[in-house]
Image 1 (cartoon, rainbow, N blue to C red):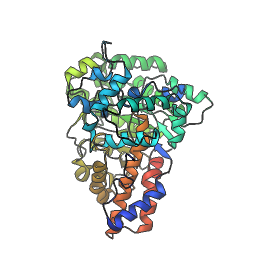
Image 2 (cartoon, rainbow, N blue to C red):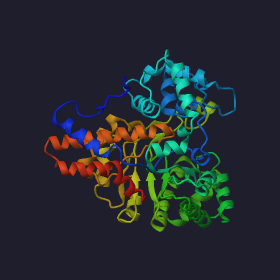
Image 3 (tube, one colour):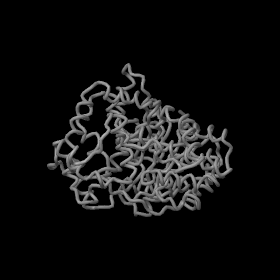
Image 4 (cartoon, helix red, strand yellow):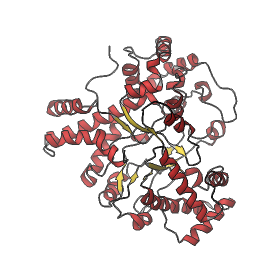
Length: 468
C-alpha cells in the first residue's frame, strides 16, 4: 500500500483536477533549483554515509522535534545536543522508537507529507510508521544508508538537484566548499553570504566576529570604512565559491539610510557593546541599505527574511542553544520599514531584493503592492511556518492579483533535512499546478499559458531570480 495518494493536493474533482494532473505531469521531473537552504556542505565534501535513521530524520530537524516537544518529549531524549555538552540520548534506535511512537502527532501536517514522501520514494517503504513498525523501519533505512547509492552525492544526483546553495556565516572559512571544488565531483553546491554575526550588535560575539573578519581580510575593521571594505572582500571571497546571494535574518524589516558619520558613530558604539536596543535596530537597518548598495556593485541577490522572534524559550536557549524550534513568527511592517532602502535604491532594476515573511497578513496589504511596483523587489515563496499546501495556496491567492507571477521567485526549500528536498519541491509543484488549473477552469487563464507558467514556477523563476 502506497503511503501517498497520487492525486494529493490537486482539486477534489472535475475539470480542474484533470488540468492539474496534466500540468503536473509535464513539470514533475524538472531539475531542482534549491537556491536558499541550510544543508551541511560537509556532506557533499566528504560523501560519507549518514550515521543512522535518527540522525538523518529526527535529531537535526526542528520541524520534527518541535512537534514532539509540544507533547512533552524531552529534546535530550531525541539526541538534540546540549549547549553545555551534557548527556543526551545517543542510541539511534531508542530515539527512533520514541519518534515512531509519536508519529501520529504529524497527521495533517506538511512534515507528514515530507516524511512519507522520503520513506516511499527514497527508501521504497510501503507501510506506515508506527510503534509496531519502528524497528523494521530502522533496520530497513539503516541497511539502505550503508549502501553507496544512499550517500549524499548519489542522492544529490537521484533527487535531480541542478544547483543547491548552503548558507555560511560571513567569517566561515568555506573549507568544505573548497574541498568540493577540488574534488572530481560535478555537483553544483554553492554558498550564500550570511553576515548576521557581523551586522547585528545584539548577537553574541559581535565585536569578536568583526575583529575576525578584519584578520581574514587584512583590513582594519575597527574603522567604519575598513569594516565596509571587509564586507566587500568577504563577499568577493564567497563569490569565488559560487555565491549569487546574501541572506539576512533580522528581527524586523527595518531599513535606514543614515548619514555616514552617524552610521560610523553607531558602529563604534556597537563595537564597545554600548548600543541600546533602538540603536542596534537602527544599525541593522542601515546595514541592509549598505548591503543593497554592495549588491549593486557585485551582483549578489539580497534576501531579507525578518519577523522571527528567535529563541522564545529562555530555558531551551540556555540548555540547548539557538535554533531549537522555538523561533516564533511576529507581526512585521514592510511599507514603512523598507522605505529608506527603497528610496535609496528601489528603482534600480539591476538590483534584486527578495522579501520573505512570517506574517502572512502582510501578503495582500503590503508585500504584493510593494513588489508590484518597485523594480528591485521580488517575493520569496511561502516560507518556514507557511511552506505547506495551505500556506502556498494562500500565498498565490493573496499576491497574484497585485504582484502577478513574475514578481515572485518560484520555490525554495530552506531546509536542513536533505531527504525532504524533493518532497518539498513536489508539494510546491502540485500546489502551483492546482492553482493554475483552477484559474483555467474558472476562465481567468488560458490553458497554454498555464503550461508555460507551471514550468516557470517550478524551475525558471528561481533560476532567473538567483542568477543561476
